[in-house]
Length: 258
Ligand SMILES: C[S@@+](CC[C@H](N)C(=O)[O-])C[C@H]1O[C@@H](n2cnc3c(N)ncnc32)[C@H](O)[C@@H]1O
Image: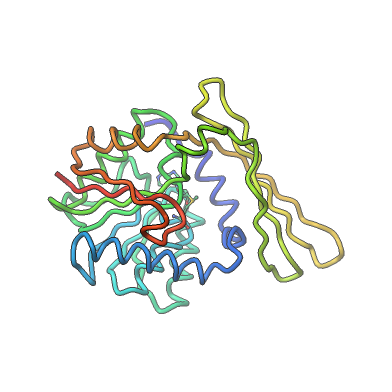
């Protein structure tokens, strides 16, 4: 398995400030938890599902689903993010068993979960068909038969038409004033992958800015491509749900463990 240490260190370095990509992270936790909970109830009819969030980061969806009554376990390749997720969950009264793990090699026995979630553009950090297949096969393995897969990615069908060079600035409150986060994107010659520079500017309290730049790479998988990989990994009925129908801020792919 190729190393993913670059991604892990990107998110380790971002963990303390990750919430600054939201104007109000608690509001994001609540909104995303509500939207994904509605998807789970509509698909499985469960109000306390066994959920694995296999790219939980600092816990946006894991905490949101825990607050809605689901029994969530969190894993992520970044130890810094997992450590913060556990702390933030406890602060909000949510039990979140969690561990550092690569989604291509999940540390669970087969058929342990009703739902596997990987949200907010986590899977596209995997840059080859082989790695995407490995991750989806692991997600399928730990799901019970007919269990529910939930993935969310950026709206790459739209993005691939324009191949933008940057993202709009996101402004958030921080202890010494407003912080700004934005990304610059450099598309590879294949037109599908891009290197990103993630800029975060935070007021330092002495009239200057602390500027932090972190770098990573994404694969902008189209919705059709990702659906095909999901079927190859022995899922059935892949379905893309638009933000207007779920209230989630990104397109959501659902599929059932065949
Ligand atoms: C954009 S963040 C989203 C985090 C979280 N879902 C949220 O919304 O707060 C992407 C996450 O994917 C994780 N990730 C990337 N590659 C991974 C892998 N191979 N295995 C597990 N986690 C991975 C990163 O560490 C990061 O936490």
